[in-house]
Amino acid sequence: MEVLDRGDGLSPRVGYTVTKKVGNAVVRNRVRRRLREAVRTHAASDMAPGNDYVIVGREDVLTTPFGQLKAELSRRLRGTR
Image 1 (cartoon, helix red, strand yellow):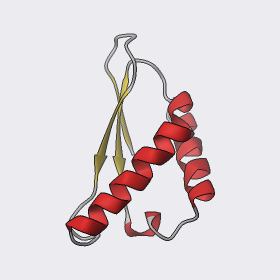
Image 2 (image 1 turned 180 degrees about the vertical axis):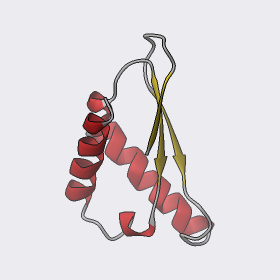
Image 3 (image 1 turned 135 degrees about the vertical axis):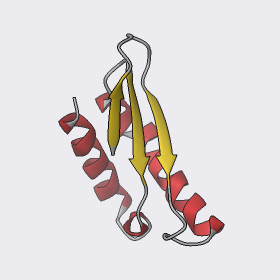
């Protein structure tokens, strides 16, 4: 995960990247959708205003239980503040 402080107080922005090493387009989109949902339901409140976040999706996102994925994402976001 990468974080860039834009220096303004606007709402945080999130970008997702999943490389072709993870799999074909269907698999990459599933990884992206799981990450997007985890941010939407749980981790968005941990993001600081005025920051841009880039979340890199890996293969294990598909096999990790969703509760654990949300908790780990939230923990990493809190650590970047």
